[in-house]
Amino acid sequence: MIHDTDIAIVGAGAAGIAAATTLRSRGIGCVVIEAAGRVGGRAHTTSGPETAHHWFDHGATWLHHAERNPLTAIARARGTGIIESDRQRTWRLQIGGRAADAGEHARYHAAWARFEATVRPRGAEDPDIAFSAAMDTMRDDPWAATIELWEAAQIAAADPARLSLRDWLVNDLDGSNLILEGGIGHFLAGLAAEAGPIALNTPATAIDWSDGARITTPRGVVRARGAIVTVSTGVLQHLAFSPALPVSHQDAIANLPMGLLTKLAFPARGADRLGLGPTMSIRQQARPGMPAMGLFAWPYGAPYMQSFIGGPTAWALAAAGPAATDAFARGQIATLLGADALKALGPALVTPWATDPWHRGSYAFATVGHAGARAVLGTPVGDGRLVFAGEAVRDDGLAGTIGGAWASGVDAAQGMIEALRGGEGGVSDRQCHPHAQAGPV
Ligand SMILES: Cc1cc2nc3c(=O)[nH]c(=O)nc-3n(C[C@H](O)[C@H](O)[C@H](O)COP(=O)(O)OP(=O)(O)OC[C@H]3O[C@@H](n4cnc5c(N)ncnc54)[C@H](O)[C@@H]3O)c2cc1C
Figure (tube, rainbow, N blue to C red):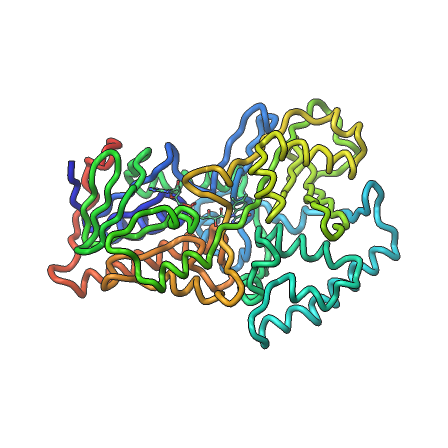
């Protein structure tokens, strides 16, 4: 069947929900199609035995840059419980199984100061280079590999040898970090429910943008005057466009590959909290060539340990399967806390972002020389009737984040309204067709 609408939105993650909310608040017709059987995309909260029946965010967790994150004001207005993460978080520095001593702490802080003084200015002024190449100036420092692991492989979820230093610099996280009670995926699902109908289990398989937009799905065709496409760059690489996208956009997609951050949750078997207070990050000294992970004990009082494995190590483990990821993480916990610690922990939940066909990674990073790819991807094509939105198109410090994804959806919707106003007939003021509520488009 063919469904006609003003604007088709592909994907019901933060960007798609924001676009739908914006359009519908202006009375503009739209159909939202979502490939998965749930909304939220990379914001996904569950609660089950594998997380000791406490909520757990598989993807986005923090509202970064809280002061200018558009979701902060929305959460406050809705009365959502907000935890000020930075006030609660404590951390411990370890070298293998022991705590670092005072001298090692001092050298660690000195290494960060050196990083700030030598690496950061290079990104701003010199030709773009890889993050790892920028670190070469301080390879003699025993903490260089730790800084590289933290900034590039874990926070940017990227391969340090491919990550553009300029992209890292522009998108370096700043400001304060908030946690939403009940989980950010749960919060976004609430916003989606208010945004109106969303057709689940309806993947776009082809997008024809030769005349307006014609989106093929296994459940029918959506014909619209314009389309906002919010899928990840990993998914974009596999989506068929007709005519082919401009070379500029093809290059932008190729130069914004997906990074990977795999999260694990290890539920407490009983009351034993291993002598660790709540919300404690354990940061370990990384060694060159030796994979390492971050550990976050009992976050905000949750009865589970969380661990983070990022970048090339995460991809290699994902290729080997969840059991390999679990085994690696258990080995790291045994090193950091002692083998007995494992007795206090149940079977892990391993997030499958690498193999999930609707995401294919965690968030995008720009490769060396291509920090501008985000702006290119965000530039509308086809007289503004085909627009890409989502975390990958931001280059304002919110790249890779749920706040950036939300802002991009709002911007795409506003841009689309302008584009269609400029065209013949203007946009209509009818609401989404009730057909879209039922599932089939
Ligand atoms: C492990 C992890 C940790 C993270 N931590 C944080 C954090 O702490 N703070 C933060 O701000 N951000 C974090 N992020 C990033 C954040 O989750 C994302 O930037 C944001 O959620 C992306 O939203 P989006 O709308 O751009 O894309 P998505 O959420 O990916 O939405 C796109 C939607 O499109 C759907 N889709 C895919 N293919 C198709 C198709 N063919 N047809 C129709 N629909 C399709 C997908 O199912 C998805 O629902 C994290 C991500 C991960 C994975």
